[in-house]
Amino acid sequence: MSSPLFVTANRIFDGEQFLTDTGLIIEDGKVTTLLPAAERPAGCRLLILDDATVVPGFVDLQVNGGGGVLFNNAPTLDGIRTICNTHARFGTTALMVTLITDTADVRGKAIEAATEAVAKGVPGYLGLHFEGPHLSLARKGTHDPALVRPMATEDLAALVACGDRIGQAMITVAPESVTPAQVAALVDAGFKVSLGHTDCKAADVGAYVAAGASLVTHLFNAMSQLGNREPGLVGAALAEGALHCGLIADGFHVDPITMGLALRAKSGPGRIFLVTDAMSSIGSDETGFELNGRQVYRRDGRLTLADGTLAGADIDMLSSVRFAHRRLDLPLEEALRMASAYPAEAIGATSKGRFVPDCDADFVVLSPDLDLQSTWIGGECVFDATAPAGADR
Image (cartoon, rainbow, N blue to C red):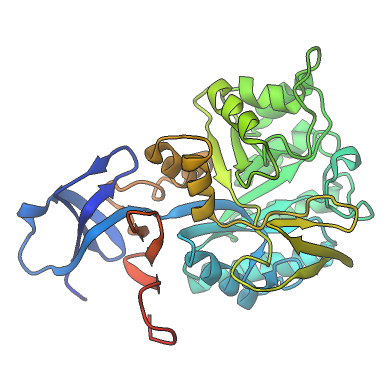
């Protein structure tokens, strides 16, 4: 067993505040304590990061792909590894691989791949997010309408059977296609249930929250909007404190003015947190890819179908943090929390998102300009941007 690692930097953000003259002691993949740098115990290995900032690793609950791999097209262990490795290059240390609406056969392959990822301890793999197929046709977005359908008995049985073996389990559903009783059964099986891709009325949401739904998928996108007489899911999500809401902060999915209004309006304790909704384009030079037999085009920071419908996002989590800080004028502390502590809270991942005793030693080293220098998972460096190309990391 190696000696503990003592990490100190110009600044350490513990999830609440920036600390100076402070160090993290890391042992067996966990942060054991934070203490003044001058009180470093003898016998520790040293990681001294002058002129850098150490922050909790980013947690992304909606990642469809990366590194040229779309999970729907490669629902395999290797596909999961590639996606996790790619997003680690942008500061994400825990992610939920997301399966977009597809066939039952593809769903089965995704479950088996996720089960393998848990068994093998793939660094960065947090769980599996099923986004569909139990959605509303009226708000399908880029999801294939031929595959969108209500939840049947066999669908519920397949999901309940896998809830305890795929890591964190999450599913996005529309009230039009599931019942409160089905939501309650999923929650009992360990799922976090998120409402999305729905044209429901605000009054419909209460029964699903009572059944255990606790999140909203990519707030504002593919859902009933806030109106003067009908608040829609957007209004219900902002008013209902039990709901945590994902938000795509790329400037294309939601206008910055709208984002700012939502952040000021959200009732707690539920928070608005960042998701990337990233597709295979992240960390690759591909100009497009195929989804359910349809071509997706990559142009000027956007991913769209031929008719212009947005098809996921072409953004990583560190870029999302920069957008929230610089374009929304949020304090850096809050932008960082939206990428780490808040998504971890939303799914009850208590070992992620903050530096507290016995949390996972997942952290990111940033330059003063918020460029990524290195990414660490479980106290091990998984990406070093300063290393020469081809060097061992």
